[in-house]
Length: 96
Image (cartoon, rainbow, N blue to C red; front, side, top):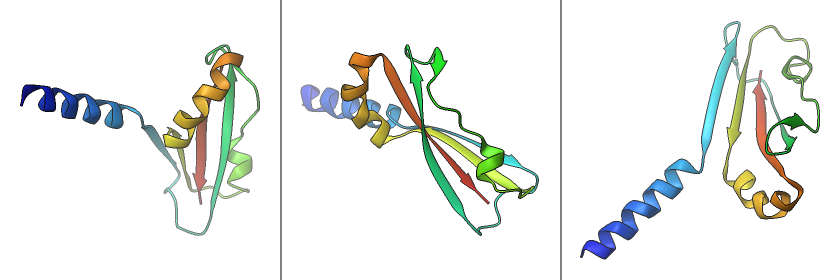
């Protein structure tokens, strides 16, 4: 029984720790009119940004929007491909 419990605890910790999300509201926050999602890549394990992401440009001139940055399941699945290149990724979503 204790080996099953350990396996379940490790599984829960791995699944719970695999997704990290940060949300930030600008102005009044999202009103539900649109969503844009892009992937941001980092070189040398986050030391340098490989592509420039601008949340203000993604919001398209709207003054109230919500920015969500996350390291989700898709980013985790990309890691075996990006790791030999010392790269990481995260997903940036802007809701207007």
